[in-house]
Amino acid sequence: MIIKQFKMQWRNVIVDVNTHKQTDIQLVFDTNVLVDALTARGQYFACAVDLLEMVRNGKVEGWYAHHTLTSVYYLLERAFAAETQNRKTATDLAQTLLRELLQFLRPLPQVGDELRRIHSMPGDDLEDLLIVHLASSYLPNPLVVTRDKWFLQHSSLAAAHPKEIIERGLTAWQSRGQPIPFADLTTQQHCIRPQLERNMHRVLHHGQYIMGPEVAELEGKLAAYTGAKHCITVASGTEALLIALMALGIKPGEEVITTPFTFVATAEVIVLLGAVPVFVDIEPDTCNIDASKIEAAITSKTRAIIPVSLYGQPADMDEINAIAARHGLTVIEDAAQSFGAEYKGRKSCNLSTIACTSFFPSKPLGCYGDGGAIFSSDENLAKAMREIRVHGQEKRYVHTRIGVGGRMDTLQCAVVLAKLERFDWEVEQRLKIGARYNALFAGKVQTVTQRPDRTSVFAQYTAFIENREQVQERLKAAGVPTAVHYPVPLHLQPAYRGGCQVHGGVKTAERMAQRVMSFPMSADLSVEDQERVVAAALEVVRN
Image (cartoon, rainbow, N blue to C red; front, side):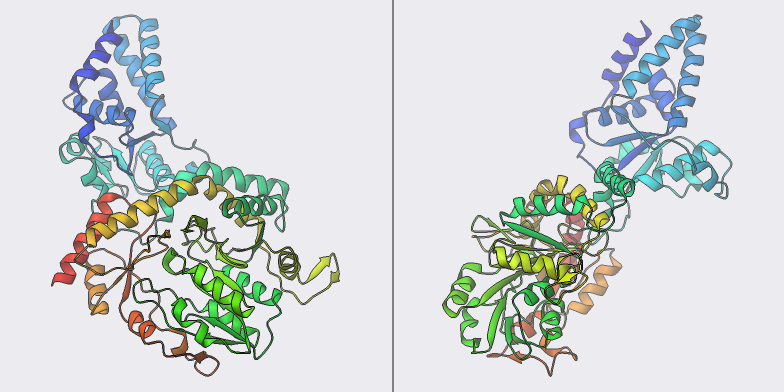
């Protein structure tokens, strides 16, 4: 009878949960709030039940600590025993309600060494200190739901009374002054933590830290994703470009055409081999290399073209490939920022003879250190690049060519394998977030254009801003991080002024370098944070 009454009360007191937006905070329930809800007692039990119902309906994540549940069970059993005067009935009722609760609340990790770690933390209540430690260690954006004064007044962890959360709404707590990350790796890691821990444990267990089984597994999955026949994982995106040029046999004095508006690695590898980077200008709307300017820069010394898929969007690869074919040149797509993007229905990294990408942590698909990959459907080039990656070895201690130590660590491959399980969803989110930025900025701020025959994975979301430094300072004061990719074109960098060529002038690249500014972008950027970013940006730009 009591259970039936409890469930009826639960249904009757809840607010319309559909009025609450889905949020990325994690509610961590303290003992007192769970007892309020499950006994249907106290002044605030209705608010506690409202929040639990939001969790049950998937509006927000709900978590508990194991020691909290022990306390809840003890208090429930005692309360029901006093009410029913029957210990067995009280025990059965407490167990039934907890089983229902465990269907939708998630457990924080079990207490282990945490007891030793928190001995120096300020506070008297061991249970409260454990919640602070566990929630802050394992959740990206926890909010403790509690009536405990210590939590509300002294805890280093965000905490709020259930009544206050209901009155203000969950979204208000989501944006309660929290800094907006430029690239949110914390939330991503939280979402894939089980896969990460599983993959890392497997590597630590078998101990093959160099060229372990995860390397071949990742290469197979990446090749299948792009459609290229071969994938060779390497130590970084820079190493990928270097190995690709080495496989082509690029010699000192030969020329490679590329863009001056990119990260230095694109030109760096050319110069390291003694070759000459030849820079041509960029398109003013996409900031990618202008394909119409490439052919005029080709000479008898030209060996290759490296277009960069800047900000996550491929360049005009069909036109570039056609130019290369007419002159017997090789095209290497620098796809460090565009893994997951498409060009005319084909995946980036399978748009030219060779493609190179980076798994730097902030890339659309990144690891937790340095890493990269090379893609090709050319059997001979793939064989050469695999050998160069391991010091030019054809087999153990047989060196058939000059090589480098360019392998990707097994542990980093394990990380990327975990991220791949979520990657399709992340690409979809990036497309949606980029489109939302476009809509919010339309007619107010000029942004990098996405061409209709291709997609961008928005490694950065970039706009063209006058008085950029002043705008950045004001946005920083408003809690909105920004970045500039890239403030100085490569032909103006001190190390490259004397070792490169500029064909036909690169005035567009020079002008864009003074204006580009990127806003926060990641698959887990919330609508609320994105609206905060745009509102702050428009306010600053208008003034």
